[in-house]
Every structure is written in structure tokens, then in C-alpha cells.
Length: 268
Image (tube, rainbow, N blue to C red; front, side, top):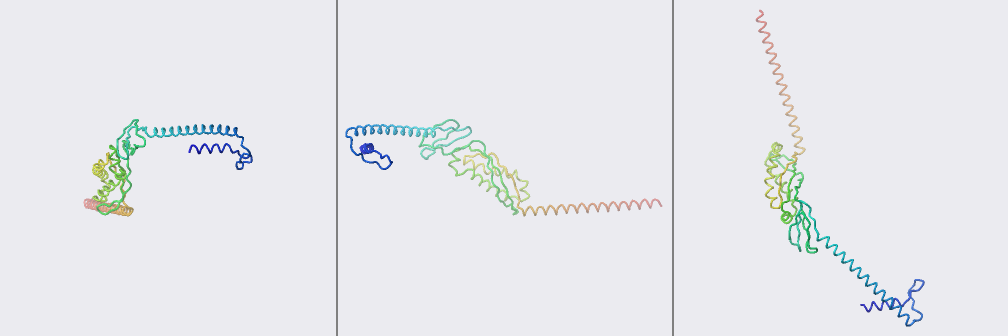
């Protein structure tokens, strides 16, 4: 390959370029010794320039590789955070807050978790009470990760898993209550959900601190029926009050008439 490069360089130097910019024209006559002297000098200059270029490119490539390696091997973990490091695809170690070094190309950060308390908003869920009344309930879960390795490898998605367990337990607990009981049992429901979720979450490296049942809303049909019931109850109470008023007025009139009769008899 080197011989081919030398022959090609000699050939390119020996053949001049036409002034019109067309294809190179062969020299009309060879100037013998001078031509080959000029070719040897040009060949030496080009070879030296190519060597310098190759050396510069190699240096740039080395600097780039070292820069990438330095950027990937130095790891800074913030306070209240922990990261998991895998070596060749297998879990190797857990790193806390501070500056750490990992082997480039062989190790990688597989998981990063915060140890601070997190909030999971469970979406509204359709539930059925014991007396077959449909309603919608949602909750908020407060938790923290105490074992990132379990949170990473014991479950696929710990937030989605937490939400699914809360929804399942919420449906089950509301199904044990009547519609009227659910409105007064919000605190009791929160405690039941916390007791049922704590053991499951601990197996995933999570600590559930508290659960709050945020809203319990009956369906529109139930709301309409409740409004009608309340309207009927108000009407009944109004009628009772009206009848009691009439009864009191009748009694008062009767007592007044009796008192008047007694006074009239005494006057005679």
C-alpha cells in the first residue's frame, strides 16, 4: 500500500494541470534529472504533511475518548438520593451522596431514587357500595423509598403497582359499607388502606407513611335521588311544623273559649 501511494504521488507531481482547468496534459518533454528532483521534494513534503495530519487526528481521537471516559466514570450523587450501579448487566453496588467513580464501558447507572417522601395521586375509581349505590372515590398516597434495590428489581413499576393495590383495596372496603356510611367513614377507610398496603409495599422497598381518601362522590343518578329525598324530607318537616302550628292554635283557641266561658259563668 505504501508503494502504491508513493507511485501515485510521483505520477500526480509529474503530470501538470492544464491552464484551462481541463484534464491534465502529459508534458511535451521530460526534463530528465530536474523533473525527478522536483518530484522527490514534493513527495517528501506530502508524506510529512500526511504524517502530521494522521498524528493530529490520532491525538484528537485520544482526547475525545478520554473526555467521554472521564464524563462517564465520574458520578456525583445528590443528598437524599441513591443510585444503583450494574456491572456487565448484573447489580453490583449502591451509591449514596457524594462523588463516585465507575468503570466506563463496563458499568452503568441502572436506577436513581430519591429517599425523600413522595406523593402518589391515585386516579378516581368507580366503586359499588353494599346497597348497590355507584360512586367515585380517589386517594393520595404518601410514601418513601427505603431500599432502591428492591424498588428496582422486585417490581416493574412501583408507582403503578401502588396505585393498583390502593384501587383494589378501596373498591373492597367501600363494598362493605352502605352509601350513607361511606360519607362518615373517610378516616376509617384511610386507616384500613394504610394497614393493608404497608406490608405489600415493604416487599417493594417502600414505606407508606399515610393514605388519605380525598373525595367520595356518588353518581349523578344517586345525587338526583338524594336531592329528591331531601326535598321530600323538607316538605314533610314543613307539613309537620304546619300541622303542629295548627294544633297549637286550635288548643289555644279552645283554652281561650273555655276561659271565657268560666269567666262568664262567674259573672252571673
